[in-house]
Image (tube, rainbow, N blue to C red):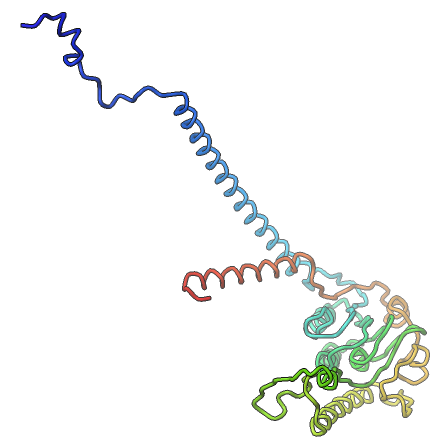
Length: 335
């Protein structure tokens, strides 16, 4: 038998340690564990902050949409305009085109809104435009004629700085045209402009390589020569549009015109000269027409304009659409 003292002193016979027991932690290991814990909590906090921002942005966009809808259905509603007698006004400012504030869509919807109000006694088109698209002007001209017959209310044009080309195309449909003595009026003509670089290209030794299917598909290409047949075709088209313009002016102004050889040549005149030629009826301003002609001095602006909120919504919609397309491409593997 062994002596118990020998057993206690012999390490081979000592009691085994618990295998699950963790070894003692060194200072370095403790620091690493603490650092990892702090990083984990920092990551969780960042995720929480990101979620809060996402929720906040969504709430902000919802508020923005609510403001836009409230403005669209509340401020532009005819029921919110005063029902007392007043002069309705619609502005036509700047270039007349499909993508501008003076587009046919904007102007026509504003005119309809103004004339449908039972309190409006007349509509004044406040014009300050150098012209633009004959198509857009023609649409507005036709709508003036239709709305005047439908609502049996007079429609006047009041010119501020200028009423030229397509702007005068619109004004010609009004019952009367009022101008300032220094306004610019007229420019009854049509143009098609461009540049030609063929001579310069020959001097520089540059060759134009244009492939078309159709002999005239490159018509008006600035780097290709223009044939006589193409020039005649373009001129015939311009002459036809010019004739349509002249017909509209004659129909709108009638016997008031004191026609001269230069009247439809594209020249423009001062407001006083326009009155003398019958292109305008009298000198006058918006307030003067409302007060003395319409007999309703209160002027209400019915012009529909794109506000800041609407522009932001359009940009947001474009960004969402672009993001959706990109996501679809990525998910389908398309590029």
